[in-house]
Length: 284
Image 1: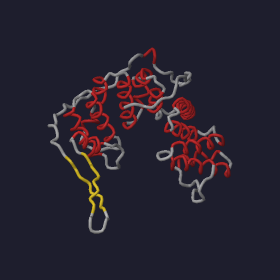
Image 2: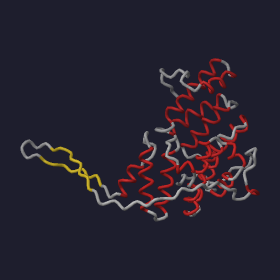
Image 3: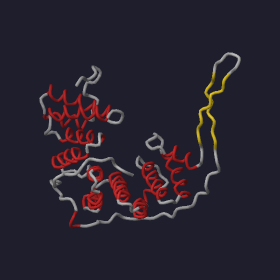
Image 4: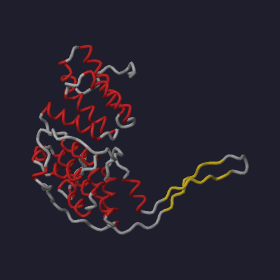
């Protein structure tokens, strides 16, 4: 696959660059440039990123960073079985638990929310950093919603991180997930309050919380063309219609810890269990 001339491979993270030092110099450069393209395209063009990841994988399948990048590219393309296999390979190579939440989310994508919940209660979760634990909580709540357990999803998301006033990288997504779960359960007033809090913390627009809040407030954006009879030109005018917002209700803080669903069904530490099932879109 063609790579723009301005991509040198030096753009990648220094830790990844260090991993690639085990390869011959020319090969390491080729792999690095493909990894740069994966990172560049994964949000806007997941299939394009997937294509570059396959090239990198063909060149250096024994490098953990390459397996991880291939996993994320497959995940972004909703190829969950393939993504899970790559994440497991990377985990075996590094011994790290960092990929545990996204591995659990792949189980959801494969239509196995119960397996995701087993992983949420596994010992590996306690080894995750704070960001990883919040991510695992989001996955567990999504799995509860997959099973139509809305109340359990809401309780799963209630945590010190949700109640905290400090804004962290995960804050907007956590508040958004909580608001969405409340709305699904018919608790519209509380949902509006938490969508508003999500908007406050979403500085980079990672969610559509502002649109969801406007929808709850009854705000409609209507494009109206106003014709000018004198010259035939028309200007676009945006009309905003706003209805009274429902009164927000306070939500008590809660500190709820994830608990194992079944110790007997938890994923083996070596991650070697077979992957089967159809791929599907993630929910929640």
